[in-house]
Each structure stands twice: as C-alpha cells, then as structure tokens.
Length: 176
Image (spheres, rainbow, N blue to C red):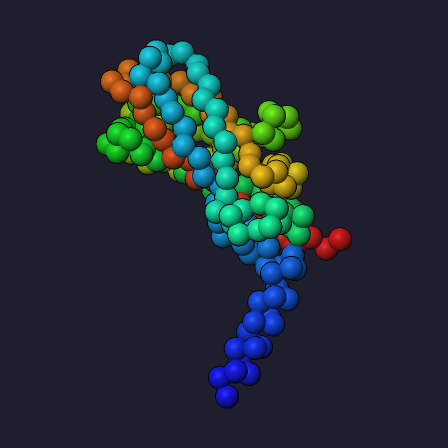
C-alpha cells in the first residue's frame, strides 16, 4: 500500500525537476549570497569598490551547476547587508552603498540595490533599496555572478570588516 504513493511522489518529483515551474520555485527560494570585505585601510569620505563572486545554494544540486534556462523574468526582490565579522560592526559606519551584479567577467553590469541614507546608528544589519528595473535572466545563467559594492565610509574601521550580502530573486517559468 505504501509503494503506490511512494512511486507516485517519485514520478511527480522527476516530472517537476525538469520543468520551469519547479525551477522558478527553486530560484525564488534560494538567494544569491556573497561575503564582501571592507579593509581597515579604507578612509572615511572616499568612495571604494569591493568585488566578490556570489552563488546560489541550488547550484550545488544540478548537473552543470545551473538550471536557469528553465526560468525567465528574473528580478531582484530583496537585498540585505549584515555584518559577519566583527559581528557587532555598525553598518552605520557606511554612509552609502550601491550593489551591482554582472557576469563573472564584469560585463552586463546592472545595479540591483543601493542605500544612500544609512543612519549612523543602524546596527549590524540593513535592508537595502532594490532596483528591479532590469531582468537578470542572462546573469543567473552563469555558474556564479560578480558582485561589486561601491561604498563610502563614515568612520574608520579598526579591523577588516566582513559583510554578508543576501540577494533574493523572483523567477517565472520559461514558456519557450
């Protein structure tokens, strides 16, 4: 009796793993994450750039590292910046931050999030303002994406600061 429901659920799983609906749910569930380092040598009031590669958890479970051909209409829906080390680093030490996403070689760069009015006492985490005016379909087809953060510091940092950036996406099934 248990064999029949088990076989049906396995069949549905196999059917849905190859279709756009399943992949759109996966892409919308697992965010792209990366760590960004702000060196202690950064001077307040000057604009700096930090570059890092971002990946999504779902890429670990696909044969070629990415099933993004199954989705379209991919847009950014959330962006959060959080201090990893030191954990008590005040994000308010940053005056402004702009987040750009591109292919690994830096081509096709688009701004996906920013914040220009970070208050001085915001704490160790902040939600950024998203820019979802661009589709990210081509970028998420890459095995990983390049993240560039342009920032201005308000205060000196005593040590190198490690920040975690989490970018949430929404995707729709590709109907082609």
